[in-house]
Amino acid sequence: MQYRRLGRLVALAASVLVVPASQAQAMKIRMASLPERVAQADAVVVGKVTTIEEKNVRIAAVPGAPEKTEFQVAVIEIADAVRGAKGLTHVRVAFPLPQAAGPPRPGPLRRGPTVSLTKGQEGCFFLQQHPEEALFLLEPVAQPLDAKSDTYKKELAEAKRFAKLLQDPTAGLKSKDADERVLTAGLLVARYRSFRPGKTKQESIDAEQSKLILQALADADFTKPASTTGIAPQQTFFMLGLTDKDGWNPPPFKDFQKEFPAVVKKWLQDNAGKYRIQRIVGEKGEQK
Image (cartoon, rainbow, N blue to C red; front, side, top):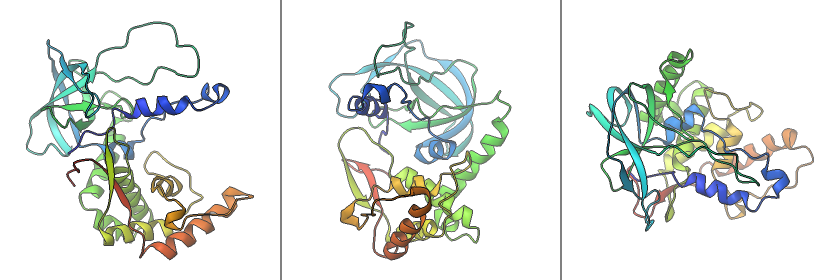
């Protein structure tokens, strides 16, 4: 598995630089939804932080970076390996040092979200495998589920459902339930098309699975907004990253909400058997 997205915040901050300050002031870094957190994690574990190691570690925050960053390390005792981490009883998890307190930064750039762990903390954790070190990482936009939260049981049940769909995606994509097909498609695209820092490349996914994903989207209701238990079909479609080279060159819309569904469905129906969804991977590839 390749280390994924600690560079996302850097990339998002850089994108703000090309936005007018009046617009940038209103920009916020979007936190990952629960299905995205499950789909994009290398490991999802339920457990308890038993130790915060006294000695910090210095590791590369972005693959290939010459400089290393200091991280704290927590040890999580695993009660349930929801996704990945099978057979492990404990994992070491690195997380950034607390940010120094201070006044808000002036201008368009704002301090991004932070994430930390404390001894005794219980919940569900979404982890990324570091490519070189024998430890996992926490991504700031993928906050853990807090076992003390009133919504914890419901959210944990949903996270386990998402993990189950990813474990056997063909079953989900062929489900008689249209919503389950669309949800499975969204989970897969969220995983395949997630941002990765460092040098990347794109490779085609399995042809049959690609066709099933596009067919699921073709049958979807594009008027439905995103929900906490799914990924909106429109969001999934745009994550594909299509260009005019893929035959996606829609005309200007006079009324986007009314005209977009028909245009996108036509493209999906015409290309489900021809287009291959592209998976973003690190330069050396990624474990499937």
